[in-house]
Image 1: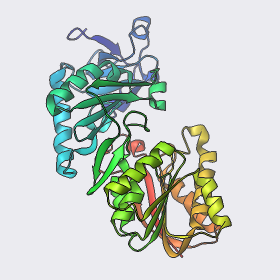
Image 2 (image 1 turned 30 degrees about the vertical axis):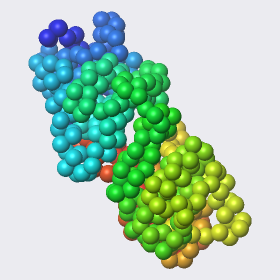
Image 3 (image 1 turned 45 degrees about the vertical axis):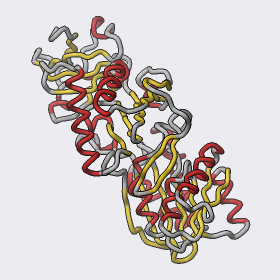
Image 4 (image 1 turned 180 degrees about the horizontal axis):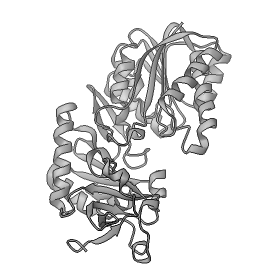
Length: 396
């Protein structure tokens, strides 16, 4: 025991990855004796090498493939409110410097030193996703520290994604502080949007596309724009704000489309923004049947590759989407396509888009290949966590 913490010992050689700076230790690298297996998921433990030397402190889950998520290499460090406050202060200082307004991804898991935890900030509302068993056990302490530091009017604890299932956690959604009277405000590059932190997807908004929305909007002036998988209108409304002649936002969720309409009003763009509740592929089929085309087509779909087993099927879906979207782009127009699939490498995504473009009988050029904004930093030893890939092309 160290500072009243249980100790977990690694197998011989089980420290090899961690000694290079990797923040994860996998279950086959841990000496799983009966006492270790009996530790509750999320336990804060001192991690020991096979020879008994301390390696650091981590969050342990005997039921997960990622058995240990390291918090610090200082084995004597207490994991308390002071520890959390220092991580949070560092993250706030960085975001305030980069973004300038308190609307951003505040904590991005391992890259910000709080493994498996996401915090999005919407002015005076915080949405916390504890996606690891360890961060779930720390969630009350984390909420208290956030409350003391930022004094928000509301804090929401939310999580229903596959990461929680892999940790053996049930879906959750509850108010940890305050109350919400409906959708919350989002400010992004001068635009005013709405997010549903109660019933929306993930935290209610996708800050990872912030800079890509502005990038696509640069090509929207005097253009007819199609925004597929529009959700609550981040891409489409930003395009309207930057001079689009018309914007059509398409999403299968009626509640999301209702938020698009409200955002159009808020940004004085209602006269140029129309909406349609429809599934993207079905809409594209109808557009093809009526020969409807656009100057800029944007498609930001949900993950088509949710697991490694979906790789080939998901790749074909991205190719199909690229083909159908490219066929709706006027000659000389632009196409923005994105993938948020962890299991879809950037080079494979680009290859599938290229094949889709060719199958549509179109040619063109890639102008930008981008990813998530800087408030979604990447741990240097976890390049696979750079999940978002996006391409902006001109189509001949």
